[in-house]
Length: 91
Image 1 (cartoon, rainbow, N blue to C red):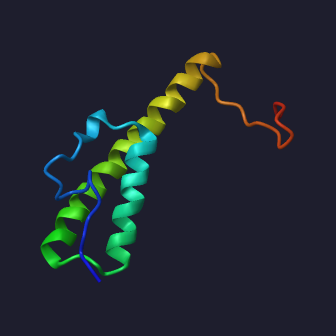
Image 2 (cartoon, rainbow, N blue to C red):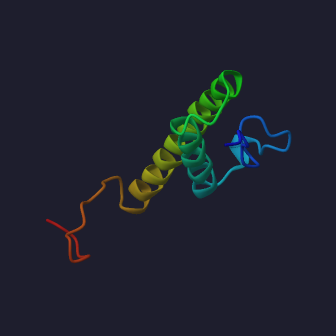
């Protein structure tokens, strides 16, 4: 078993700046980090670096979700509304 880490991970010299990552790319990288760590495929130092990168990616994803929620609130005049399961608005 190898300890290879995909491009864009914590130890990659070409890793993207997290602030530049779109939500989907950040989430995909976070999921890959989790799989690598859960699989026990990383040496200790790489695990620590991956944990740091994962923590930063998680904060980035949470911030993007919060920003999206604020945008929806603006579009909905300050109130979020639940959607009914059939796609209509719940009351």
